[in-house]
Image (tube, rainbow, N blue to C red; front, side):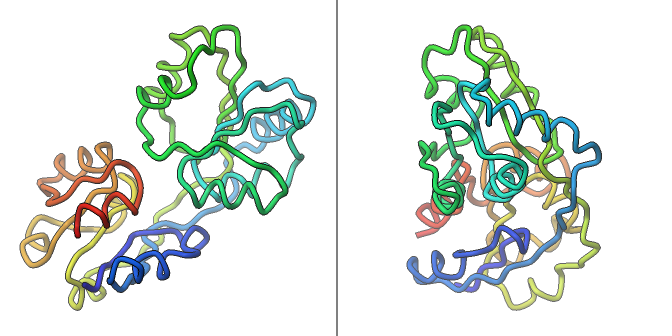
Length: 227
């Protein structure tokens, strides 16, 4: 199948190879572009705290966030690093560090995975898109949370209609990428529409688009379900 994927250009490395392993062709459609955060101060603070070992657990939700934080400072070796997905973990390795990989990115799953975090300080380097559910789930278990937007996502102003004319399916990789795509329910009638996870699916439903497949937060899960 020829599958359109709404992925940032900066985060698309390895995607064509991944899709070929499942027998598909990926067409990258960047409905968003990445730029520096509106306020760099929180990221500077988080990087400094991590370098001094004042963070117990450092969470990266994307490979792009890894690069942005490591540009500021490198975490102390005592910091436990947790990456969302293998691509994020690979980026951590490129900087000479190792990390644990969590495959499913849901707030409750994350809290359960981390175990006993009472009294721990947890840093989160993320896109400039709040995730109050994740913060609340970790804080409710007695952790102190230090959040820092590592980059800002903006609509790329790109209409994906032309790309979708030749596609057999489309995977929306975030709620924001879907909302920026100008996609509507009429387009969904001609091919399979896939949400990478439940939050993306929820954003789609609000605009009348019912996903055919809902992954567990990774492209791999979507491809496995598609197969």
